[in-house]
Length: 281
Image (cartoon, rainbow, N blue to C red; front, side, top):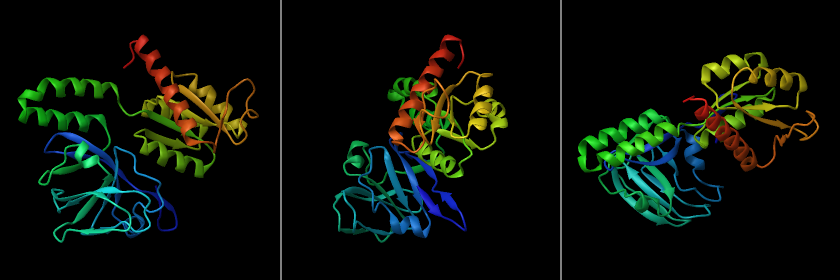
């Protein structure tokens, strides 16, 4: 999500939101802690996917005017402890809790699915595997009967690190949009307009996939040549697919985002498989 800043566009931050009481990751939450994002809320969206949420603060009350779908609303105190849960709040309704300092909005039914209860303590964490493992390990220390399961989950999480994507494009708008959208898919994104830095950034960020904007042939040729020096998946996009580079499959730069995500994930999976075969972690 983009927000108008002082003369520029700024990205709305996202965090992993954990339930410290039951040790479960509740959602990836956007932080609406500025006037415009709080006022806008979820208005205009067609829905809120499971596993995503919107944290409004300060916010002792909310309304669902102009919304198209129902939500669950978790009213939280200043320590992010759950004070009240309003489930299946329909459009054109108002809900409030005078003691609340923040509200977490989830898809309808998510609070029950995730086992959230009044009195649970939530926490915000950066979106990285280490924090997930640390919180689950702490939970296991307090719940010995779940230790084996948590250990297995932690090992799996260590393998499922966020996909690290390097976006190379002369188009500043494309770099900003890709950073925002891929970030919401839990990717770690680095973007640059400088093709000469591709090899350096690939090493520095340990990139899994490089997305190259082939609309500018010189930039594309330079970036592609540098990618060859280090194993990584490659996805090429262009303003006019099929015309920028011969004998190379190109995706529409501003085509369906799901097509681009699928290509990036496929390239990342192929890169990971190659790395495993080559004993690369």
